[in-house]
Length: 185
Image 1 (tube, rainbow, N blue to C red):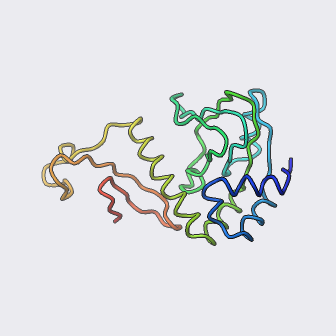
Image 2 (image 1 turned 60 degrees about the vertical axis):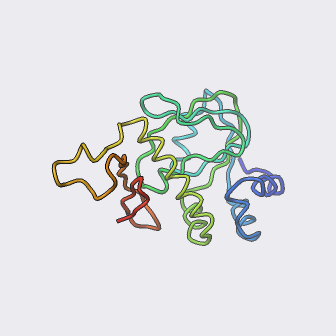
């Protein structure tokens, strides 16, 4: 389904980071976005048809669940999801549970990449959001590593007892190592 262009343009003006795009970029993406009505009966088909992509909740309520079933985030109007897979290239493994039927806007992977290449503010928004998501996922999936978990002499030179959350993330087309001390190597 193609959403109403004028209504979608107004919606995007109130939806970070789309509000940071130049007017021409926002109008262009408004013409590319698709919309889907999602309920408990079609949610699996929705993901099969439109994955991977950036999703924007227009209406309704949804729970984003990790593969083990724990709640990652309750999604409502203007919330974005799907970007970790687009940024990292990893397989989509999270699930969506419908709390209240609603409409979800879909930005294709190619259109998402084009916006990231043409808007530094847009790209930085998603890098930061992905960073927060990685920290959340790590806190649920494993205890943080501390200098005590490294073999003798192998610990990085960080202050004693500082928890290290070592992760890899895709940043501007390359893989970088990120840790809680905010240092990329």
